[in-house]
Length: 346
Ligand code: DAH
Image 1 (cartoon, helix red, strand yellow):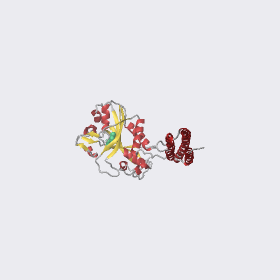
Image 2 (cartoon, rainbow, N blue to C red):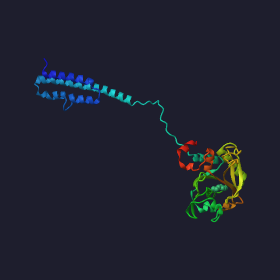
Image 3 (cartoon, rainbow, N blue to C red):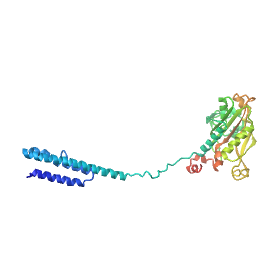
Image 4 (tube, rainbow, N blue to C red):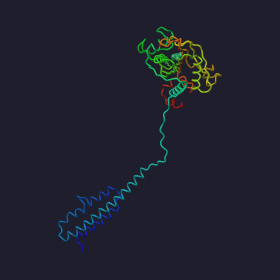
């Protein structure tokens, strides 16, 4: 014959079973555990704590039954907990599903600035012809930028290049890459095959074809036998690498203080192949730069014996090459950092 305690225990057991079946979150399970098995307020815990008040025989029976229920409920809880956790994990996986077969989001890729593209081409071309690249300072002395190039202080040709002075008469922003001719020759003995690329500065009124900062490339070759025919060959190869096809070079007599003889050189127009068009202003030719045989006074200045050594030099603007290549009509575009402009040119 069951006692009240036993009947109550059985009722609690059934209630706990029934409730547990419907619970489907970790929080609800924890709440259930506290209510039945919790150390402080658990119903079953209370029964076990109250055993001491029961008479001997009764205490043993109820105690065994209560402990059996406890073991059973703990096992049930653990089973339910595992089921709920599996459900929750499955739900999370479903919610955070990633389709690894979808195409990735494209990363924007930058562009090489058109001037850098041209400079890379120049470097490749000059290296292929055996010229080595050098660098020189943009803040230059009057000596290297002018005097060593046969431009003494009152020389009228100084006016051809309006100068940004840092210390008037002494320190300036280089107006040309030519001072590197002297710097390179001072640093080595012949033979020399060198080129320099970089910024030059001129204090000019800025317009579509004039910038205060632009870039030049300077070439220099010194040995015992070279002639203007070699210069012409180098310039022609250069022009063909820059503009493609069977470009031709023509010399026009000119004057530069550091070359003798001096020549400006033109390339036949790549747009009309020399027939005459808008690009070449209907002349068939495009002005490219200055050149000549290095003046004996410049050679003497660096300690080269001009009766033994001779050489040629040339210099030209890099923006001009890029403008012709991509039909750009305003030199200011290069420094504008306008992405719409840069993206067009590849
Ligand atoms: N430096 C000259 C200028 O900026 C260009 C030039 C002319 C360079 C003759 C040379 C040269 O090397 O031989 O106008």
